[in-house]
Length: 59
Image (cartoon, rainbow, N blue to C red):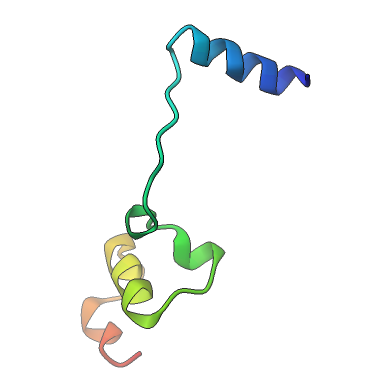
């Protein structure tokens, strides 16, 4: 096993690290990594504060 994975495994076993599933609608970085439907895209971009909310209605 690679060292980086072994160290993560050890931290999980010591309960210092916790992995949780995060739903797509909560991942604000999604517009930077994949194609999304317009409604989801606009919501994420608005929460990131990248584009003024008034401009989103024109997209």
